[in-house]
Length: 211
Image 1: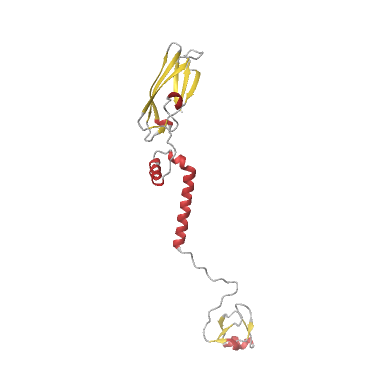
Image 2: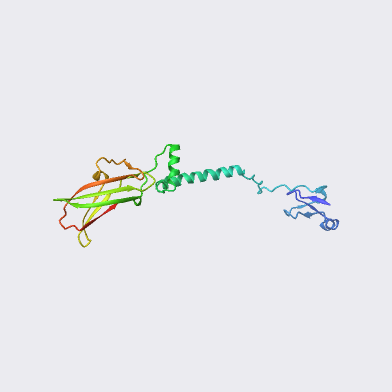
């Protein structure tokens, strides 16, 4: 026979021998409730009702919402990366063309490209006049992008190669027509001519460094 617990509604079978030994009372194997099996006979196995502490299974989140969340998260991460690394990326000669193209579309202004190693000094000379030196040099932009004019450090050396004087010249010092916003286009060359006062020590040579 099939019996159902009146408390938890658990259904289980009870043999004739078990019923005779139960003396009119049986114990539910699920919740230990004692009840009369004859008063709780059932014909089919009833689906057990959930206990109060059981919860129905939640419906899984749709894959489309999950994918959307991942996409938005990656997009925000990308914007943060570009915000903090935009200057570094703009100085990369491989990535910069893509940045320039993107700025044309969205109307932004990328930072000026600057790589001092992509300037070359084509020639330089230091000529002694009556009471001063004349420094002349020609410098070319070898980069594939316009660059700001560099600072130029002139170092005077004695005959043993020891520095005896130095000075840094800014673009406004060596070319008066240059303003801060001016850029030197790719493959363009500019020349400088500067009058240098005689130092106290004798000069045996010089060097120039682009900064």
